[in-house]
Length: 375
Image (cartoon, rainbow, N blue to C red; front, side, top):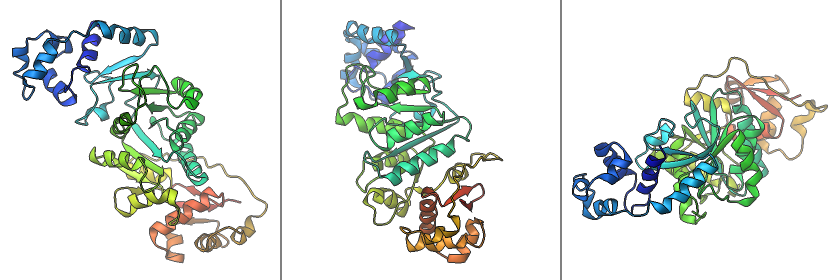
């Protein structure tokens, strides 16, 4: 097994041998060791490989330098996942540019029945933080769900921390080797994730967190997921590229809307406006769109207030929020249809207004697109 891993590592060191050629080679030779034991003339028979690549494989002499990588893997109990392994992320495997070898340390099942990526800005607003935390809190009721992100500053870290808080396995996909951590400030978070989730990368030891590694990291995040949720991002945020990758891989993309004049939500609003992302305001909406079974009973935790009867008079609410909240003075529980019939707002505007009121603690969402006044 260790010897076969040596050949798997070697494939990644051959210039021009990426996922496409690796798949072709494995189709002909079955195993990496058989590839390196073949002659250059035999290798040239692989469609499109060419004499240069064939010679580079046949004459490869860098095996001794890979011994250090093997020692690191063994010392720190790293799980190498080759593209033919059963535990390799099967969703990612279906992507044409899936990495041929991944390195994983942790306890999570990379092939959980439901995998959701949560991504967003590195400098979130309080709105973005709360929306992310609330969404993940409610995901705790979904069985066999895995949350992945990139362990970056901002929304990534918020997502990982919220997942740990609610005991949801969470994976951080890295843009460097497992012998280091970027950013260093997330060292404690990463250690906690190893116990209830894990860290995953395609990069070998010594690979630094260079800028050109992160688009590769983002493609892995998108490829591993059933759904990608952008909770807050600017109009030119890097999360938009991950969303584009997800669309290329035929994954469902969701975005949490923000106020129309809020620059930090402009990227999410644009994704929704352009039809690239589905508007998302709660976990029930995610389950419905993904055709995931909604649990029959959902526990709703509410915080009471002595001044519930005067909520619609509270300062700081927009006109839309105040108008909507006044409906609950007459009836404490309303369906989305009830609300839409009463005030006839645009659906997207109404969804944003409901989300804002929920984040502010004025209402809570219930299964079946129903909302209740928090008293």
